[in-house]
Length: 169
Image (cartoon, rainbow, N blue to C red):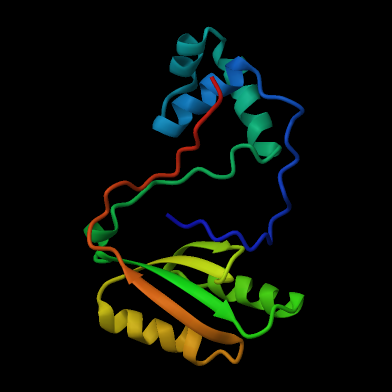
């Protein structure tokens, strides 16, 4: 999962509303994005070309943000998931933007959220081992003049991980 929201891409221009057909299409695509448009059409009672037009519109407007394969981290040698709270020294806009860019450009950072509260960022990181994490902390935190402190939480068990968004019924 790689989801850092540094917003180098423009915010989506959402349509005024998603109808029941759009929501049904999205529900199918969230379960399996490789479902043929013909089968989606049969499931939602639309023609394949109508499904194709709707999917294209939702991609163009940013409702569908991307098409990816979700990979099991342990299967590719990245079994450790770490959550990190990062507190910055300064909250000047250019320094926040610089942190967003750095976190976004770091492959080990799977998700990045700019948050309210005591921490400024919450990161979700995957690494092969704790040595790799130590190296990453030096690069991201210790070498940065703008990181006041960071707190690390190592996941003991991945109970649920997903990118599906609950859809209105």
